[in-house]
Length: 458
Ligand SMILES: *[C@@H]1O[C@H](CO)[C@@H](O)[C@H](O)[C@H]1NC(C)=O
Ligand SMILES: *[C@@H]1O[C@H](CO)[C@@H](O)[C@H](O)[C@H]1NC(C)=O
Ligand SMILES: *[C@@H]1O[C@H](CO)[C@@H](O)[C@H](O)[C@H]1NC(C)=O
Ligand SMILES: *[C@@H]1O[C@H](CO)[C@@H](O)[C@H](O)[C@H]1NC(C)=O
Image 1 (tube, rainbow, N blue to C red):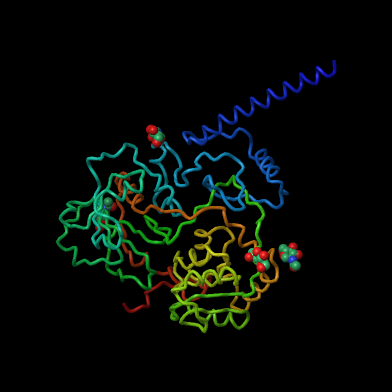
Image 2 (tube, rainbow, N blue to C red):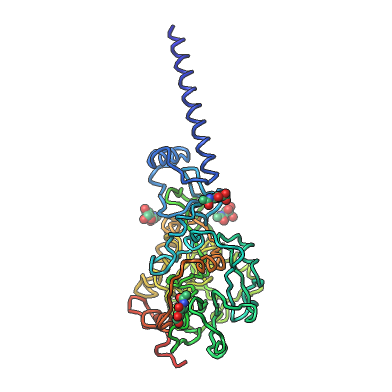
């Protein structure tokens, strides 16, 4: 009798479990298809507990991310995703609903972020016509862009809005939707050009204010800016890190990044002069901790043609790397930081943009900013502390695997923005925006920004 009751119970339990599994498998595939915004079958806390149990780690070792988008399917490293991911295949895609896409915040005055995902996903309410492509006239020539004339770039990159074409032929441009100037603007070259009110003149610039054209007396010439500055209309960063979803947890690192490293600080540098006296800072730092300067500004050599070996040496031997920019200007964070710094197994020490700018652009807890210290001696003391304690040192690697570097689809975003319902805008004093008070500093940011060029005789 008792046996039969047990058996009946077992059958019921099995049936319930099967039903639950079937329901969940169904829900899972619906999410994978990405057709709709998923509704969570359980609350976050339950999922979290389940994920921790599955990974068999203690809660105190795991931390949540505070980010926006989901990880791709091949979520790597030490990141633990605890829910099926509706948009696994496509980091840049947010929603498939054009009525909402047309309401995304895409302009600098609307948000303090770079708005790159929003612009990628922006689509006008009504589908644009293939018969009326918007022309982008690249006044400074297509040869610098590695882009062919025509519509190809928009179609190849599978832009959400692809009804645009590029040309650098003035004749072919007709009355273009946009005129793009790369680095240099010549009023002389544009004297005979018929400018209509609906045209958008775009100023593109990747050099810092110290090394770019003087823009004085250019009132109302440019409608939009396209620079690395996060308050540009179309932001063009050197690299873009896209963190994953807030519902992702990081596990403890499986690797000790301090293991076997015998050296302290390295720096590969070829340009010794700079506005921020980075070489002076590095030299003084070297009086308190080992700093190996490779290249023409220091005693050590690692040939450029042996780049791969130099990077390997960096990863194997060194704990820190000086990712020092040549100028301290707003948002000016170049590949020195991303490629030589973050992509390697070292902790980048940064000098350049303000700490606030780095925090916006870089993964959480991934760098050390010189402004956090009174000077090189104090920084050296901190580095020695990290050097002596692997736990503290490895904190700077917890971010690895918590996001990904993404293509920012510059042309797609430009095309999308040209389809935004008419919005008139222009820069009254672009020189002030670009190099006015507060844009650059010679020393620490906390000492106050002075501007780049107000005192420079161009
Ligand atoms: C969403 O995407 C699918 C496939 O790409 C498409 O068939 C569908 O029409 C789209 N829905 C909307 C509302 O655009
Ligand atoms: C450190 O060196 C040991 C012995 O050579 C080696 O087994 C180990 O894999 C190395 N660790 C790392 C992280 O490279
Ligand atoms: C290293 O730092 C951690 C975190 O502050 C601390 O708990 C630990 O005791 C330190 N280890 C040593 C050997 O000082
Ligand atoms: C571009 O700027 C000029 C001012 O120089 C203005 O007349 C024009 O309407 C602007 N166009 C757009 C689309 O903002």
